[in-house]
Image (cartoon, rainbow, N blue to C red; front, side):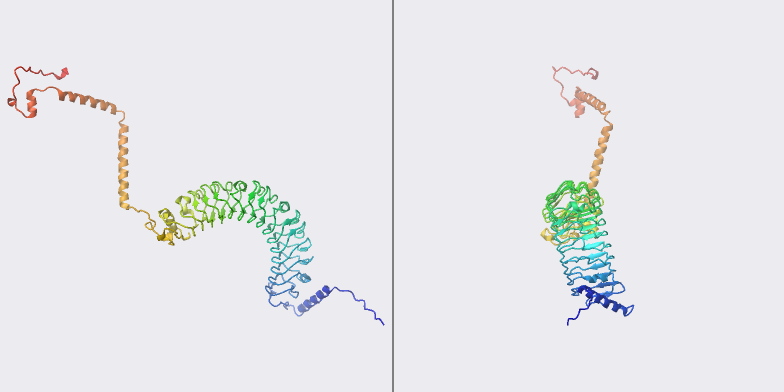
Length: 529
């Protein structure tokens, strides 16, 4: 005889397991109003703060017997491979961290019950794809971190179920293709990370949907060049990070349409010259990072147009040798200048940092600077100066810096590299004699100064006297010449023998009588002359 099989409803295996687990949870809570949830080994459960932390607990599945009212669940560094239906029991979650696990994919509707969830961290897993159903139900999500996974592309509408998302991190994946409508629906997005992917060009069409975006990080890709209007539509962008993007060419209007940009990072590219013309339109730019590029010098007016620039960082430019006078002449609001770790930088021309009244912080660390002129900057206005790790030659030309170091306690100590007798000594501890400066006796200098002053005064008095007498001088000279001529005539008139003798001291009786035939001389009156 064949017995008839009872007509029981068919129940899915997973549903049966879920029912059993739910029953166990309910039984555990029926034991008392203050009873604590079951906390797995290696986890920390706090029913007062409603926080559960399971870090490095060797979990391979999500725990199901936790307090259903928990708001923060942190399960980092475990071995979880998938998100199962146990998530439905934690509908009060606001923060979920599943980073550093072994997640390969995320089943559809995994977060259908997490309508209060605000932060979801899935970074450092093995997720290879996401769809427009992956994050369904997360209507309140503001932060999504999918950094360092295996994503290769972003399809249209993949984030349409996240209307309140403000920060999206897709960095360190393998994304090579982004469809134009990939970011549709992200009207509240303010921060986007696409750095360290495999993008060969800027996905300009997809950016046009992100009208509220304030920060964009797209460095460590392989752009090679930026075309005109590369970031069209991002007119609220304030931070643009192109660090290590592989740029060797930037078109003249690449940054057009970014009127509010405050910070630009061009560090670690392949630029041969400073893109002066391309940057000149960024009139509100305050921070510029442009080190680790291939330019040889900073020419005069290199940063023309950047009148609001406050911080300029040129670090690690291995080919940079010279900074010309006037390089920062257009940047009168500069507060911080960093020229560090440029192994060939040996020449900073005179007056390079003059005319910058707000300059407070200067770093010239780890360059090839041997000496500096006092006219490079007005050191007394600085709050910080770093000249460490330069081959400084301590001679009399550095006397000004030695005195400045004694005045400023917050300046870094500078060690001498040469000459040999001062090597490794601190410049601050040296005196004028150590630096080979000739110091004169102050009394001798005072006497010299007095003599010079008196001489100058005397000469000036003579010049003044001659100037005042310039009109009467010709008449006086004429009178002087006339009188002199008259006296000469008197000196040459004939005199009697008697007078002549008296003058010579001889008595007339002693003077010989004239020969008989000599005619007598007649005295000529003066009036006849």
